[in-house]
Amino acid sequence: MKHSYQTPDGILTCETDLTASDCGGYVKVIFNDVEVGFAVLHIHDMHIKIHKLGINEEHRNRGFGNFLMDFILKWCEAVEIFSANIHACSDISDDMTEKLKGLTQEKLITFYEKFGFVKCEKNNWMTLDFKRNGKTTKNIFTY
Image (cartoon, rainbow, N blue to C red):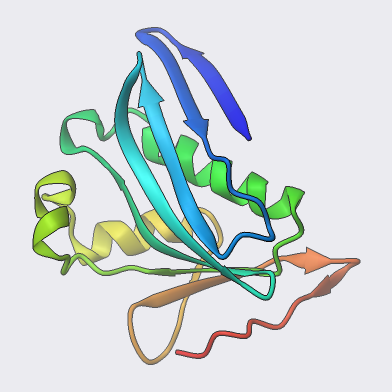
């Protein structure tokens, strides 16, 4: 699946070869032929965990993160995923520090809430349940 959008500065693209039968995969954000962001997804029994999601610091505040999240959620709807889960945590591993520096817990939570994610009681996991046939699906992941 691929979606492109013409911005005033160039072409913004999200793409993945992920299918609902895969156990996981990678979504990339490309701006003018340069990868500027990504998401790492894990799928289990038609539920998805977004393990990592980020836009490189120099490309933030330009709508690229919104474009990426919209792409992921539209993909979830297209393949009938039941729920999406994400860990809103600014405490990241060393290999991610350079790409995602400057993020705070509050910024992450606010960003995910814009898309309908709800914070779980116990920790920094957030969840979004999709409706199927007019009914909200039950999230199989517990936090």
